[in-house]
Image 1: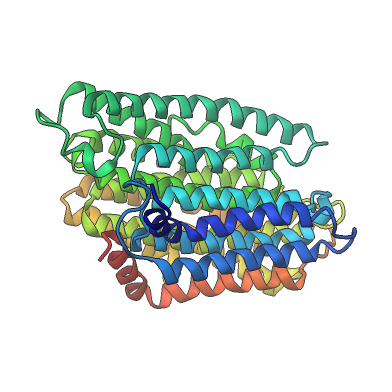
Image 2: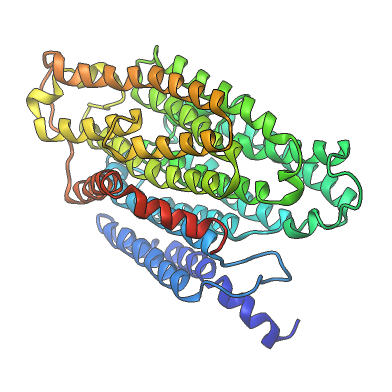
Length: 478
C-alpha cells in the first residue's frame, strides 16, 4: 500500500493514534514529574482525550479504512463520545483517591488511556480480527488496573480471576471467528452474509455466531459468564470499578450491536438465546443484590441486572431497539459513574465507604450529598422523572412495538425487584441514626465529576426525546 493510499486510513484512525501516542509520551514524561506534582499527569491525560475528541468530530465520515476493517461512522462517533466522557470523569474521580491508595503514578493514567484506545478500536471495527485487536488491548489494560492495589489480597485475587476467565472467553470468541472464516472465507462483518450461498441457518454458522456472542457476553457480565463481576468489582480500586462498569461494558455492547446488525446474524434465531440470557441475567442480578451488604458488590449485581435490561433492546432489534440500547448506555454512564463517585468520595482516612451500614444517618450529617445520592439511586431504579426511567421506558417501547409483550412484562416485574435494593440504601441514609461522624473527601475535581453526572442524569430526564433522536441518527449511520 502506497503512502497516498494509506493516508485516508491514517486520518480515519487519527483519534486512536492520538490516544496511543499521548499514552506513550506520558509514560516517559511521568517518570520526570516530581513527587507531589502528579496533577500534571492528570491534566495532560485529559488534554490527550480532548484532542482525540476533536479529531473524532472533525474527521468522522468517509469510506471504510484499512482494507475494510475500520470505519469512522456516526455509530462509532456516538460510542467514542461516551468513552471520552467515561474516561475524563474517571480521571477527575481518581486524582484524590489514587493518592490515598498510593496508586497515583503515571502508569495508572497511561493504562486508562491505552484501555480507551482499545475501546475506540472496538467501536470502529467492522472486521472480526480488528474487533479482537481492540478487545485485547482493552482487557489487558483492565486486567492490570484491577490488580493495581498490589498490597491487598482481594485485589490480587480479583485480577487473577479476571485474567483466567477472560482468557477463556477470548478463546471462545476466537473459536467462533475461526469457524466464521472457515465457512464464509471472510472475517468482515458486511461480507459474512454475502458469502453465504446456502441457508443462513446452517448449523455451523449458527454455532459460530453463538461462540462469538458468548465471548462478547462475558465482557458485559451477563449470565452464565457473570461469575467474575462481583469479585472483580469488589477487589479492584473503586475508580477502576467505576470505569469498568461503564467504559468496557459500552464498548462490548457496541461490538454486539455491530454483530447483530449483520444480516447473517439478524436472519438467524440467535435472538432467542439472547432473550433467555436477558431474562436470566436480570433475574439473577436483581435477586442476588437483595442480600448484599457490600456497596461495591451490590453495584456489581446491579450492573449485571442493567446489562440484562439493555440486552432486551438488542432482542427487540430494528432502529428503535438499537437506539434504545445506545441511549440506555449513555444514561447508565452518567448515573453509574455518579453513584460510584459518591462511594469514592467516602474514601477518607480509615473510612472505606464500601459497607452499606456505614451510610447510616448520612442525610442528617450531609443532606446535600445525600440528595445527590438519592438522585442517582432513583435513576438506577428507573423512578420518574429521572433519566433512568426513560432509559428503561424506550427499551420497553421497542419490545412492545416488536410484539415481545411478555418480555416487556418480565422486564417491568424484575425492575420492581431491583428497585428494592436501591430504596434500601435510601432508607439507611435517611431513616437511620448516624453511626459515627465522618467527613467525605469532596475535592473540587470530585465535585466537578459529580456535577457533570448529576447534570446528565437530570438533563436527559428533562429532554429524553432529543437524546433518543441523537441515538437514532447514529444507530444506522444516518
